[in-house]
Length: 506
Image (cartoon, rainbow, N blue to C red; front, top):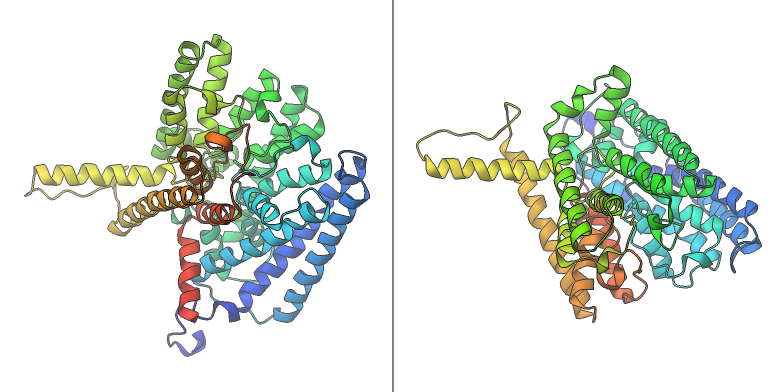
């Protein structure tokens, strides 16, 4: 029954595919996608002679995609406008976000196919989802052959996905009313841990996107002062602040000047931190918020210790000069821990210690409320706190011990959520690696590709290293990795809720 009666309605997600809110969300996102396509269309017109697939075919690809997005999005809005439910549960939010990402990924893949840049629908969808989920795993083996407009779109999809397309949707459209709050919680990285900085969800989303936009402008300007063209500055800004990793250079960030690499380092660190801290620092000049945050302190400590270790390893084992060793060491540590995936060197050729450290950092991730992927620092903190508390309880059975963080008691359901997430994360990593080995992929490549996609980090080891690609992964393997990318971006639970709802419908 409806909410007016005060009686319980259908189970969350039971009527998902009959929920008007789902189609409204997808409809408005497709309209926003059509508007966003104006940017790569302009680039295509400006560079119409670049590459074997450039020119009219590239321009036509963007125009056709725009038209398809406008028609489908407009049809959905006209059909379901005014029929949305007034309340959307958190479970409904997870479901709507999952379906919306699948749908937007489909339309985002059209420029790759229609321009002739890619022939395989699986490859095009893989590249599209990799961009929107800010994973950075690529099937493009020859970046120099890709037209400028399509390359710009490839990088731009990561910028759009950085704080989540649905966050922008909630920020500018009141179509879902109070249900926007649960859509916001379902979409934003860090989920329930995201701090509320303004009273209304739309205000939160606007504040996040304002910070995101200002930081994007600042980074692009700094990169241009380092000698990059506006095109290279824009594309690398797209892939840095989103913690994405796509680069128009075959050598990734290794083709940049040293000064530009350090600009990228600074903004990768910022992208992996909680954006509410940036908001407070900018609005309230409360820079102590960084120091007062236990999550940020842990984040900074891991980066500093790991960066120093890899720098020493580079100078000692790799024979690098001091400046190069420090730059490469900190760049790769920050890039992999924040799940950005850019590279200044082919770390697949580094020592076993360096490779093992970088893979381990893929399991860590950045802070809650950031654009980084993986498990996130706060979950590791909860798990460590719970383990320490349990060991103390075992040593003193009669003593009443509770788990606290910053003097506040951590609820049991919060600890349970962190443990369940950790177990699911490791299990999915193992399952993905085993599945790829069944398809004939070597062990190193299979398991590194699995964690690279599940954590949304991008490059792995073996032939999917930073200077390689996922092009040689079998089609079934790419499909599995697409699912892992979505699971990682939607914090696992969103995809599981989606499949549970489908099973309920059967």
